[in-house]
Amino acid sequence: MKDYQTDPFKGTFGSLENLADKISDVLSCPVTIEDHNHRLLAYSTHEDGTDPARIATIIGRRVPEKVVNSLWKDGVIPKLQESDDPVRVTSIQKVGLGDRVAVSIRKNSEVLGYIWVLEVEKKLSLDEMEMLKLAAVSAKSQLLQMQIGTKKKEENRQELFWKMLTGNLPKEELILEKLHELNILPVLPASVFILQLQEEISPSLEKDILYIAAVNQKINVLLSAADSNQMLMLASPVGKEPSLDLAKSFVESFFTHMKERFSVSEVKAAYGSLVTSFSQVEKSYKEASTVLAVQEKLGGETLSLNGYHELGIYQFLDSIYEKQQRQGYQNEMLAKLQNYDRLHKTELYHTLETYLTLDENLNKAAEVLHIHMNTLLYRLKRISEITNIDLKSPHQKIMIYLDFKLNRIF
Image (cartoon, rainbow, N blue to C red; front, side, top):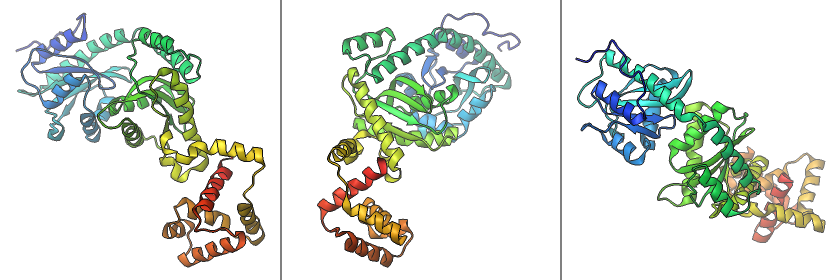
């Protein structure tokens, strides 16, 4: 029987791999050590028992997303983030997870990583659970050593990212050289993502956002920077699906997980075109900013438009507006409606905008306007009489629709 009166994890082990083997020897169970984003740092190497989740983690060098999601749903990760006591995890067969015990590696309230002990042939005793806490203390020293110099590296990465975003580093060869110096794998194609919150992004919130991105595993974040209430990321889609589908999927899951895991809602997201060279990052950033501007000014249906490629005609509104300004253009039909509304206290302008925005769906338009279908039909008839707009003419409707959006934006 092992002697639990002393701490077998005191001293130095040279590497996390050696520490993982030591923990495995002491507890007679397979062990893995992860960072706070569930990336594999080390695992014990001389045991037979394991399970599919551990095998997938070792092969992929990170915990599979479906496993992380299950651990969140079962409340395991929230418990680990709140306490330094070990947490027993019962088997979750649907994701290949066997029985195990986990403990967080902490520096005060900050979670640096996790130790996972797989209970294959035995259950850890209370004494062994206490030993696992001692192992977490030893692992903390190792992880803190790994963090030395990380802050300076991060500052250098952010400086490089801002230069790329603002076009102050236009030469591809120089960018590749800088990425190499910072040990960043230059993966392409890539896109600039902007994640906008209502509140200013604090260091802890920045960590939460990057955690979601890392665990999601649909994108690989190369560079990131927080700017007021925006999180900027240069990321490359990862997976067999089309790249733009992966980008959209990441955004949709990001909304859900920020709300469920960190109680953060009212998030906007945008991403630019996928670029095939790092000298084009500024272009992708401007496109993502354009998407956010459209969302901010138009709201409604545009909030679901996250990718620049989804904007359609909205991509060209700036150019159309500039041409209209040069020519002194005014849509006289819409001006008539606005004047009529002012004189008669009606809402014909808003009625027509809603009707066209909803693709001329009478039922939806009546519902949104909170009026009866007959009232809507009467209003549309009056609109045609006042303005001579032909609502059966696609050419007129397209121009009127664009002018509605231009009026709203500019």
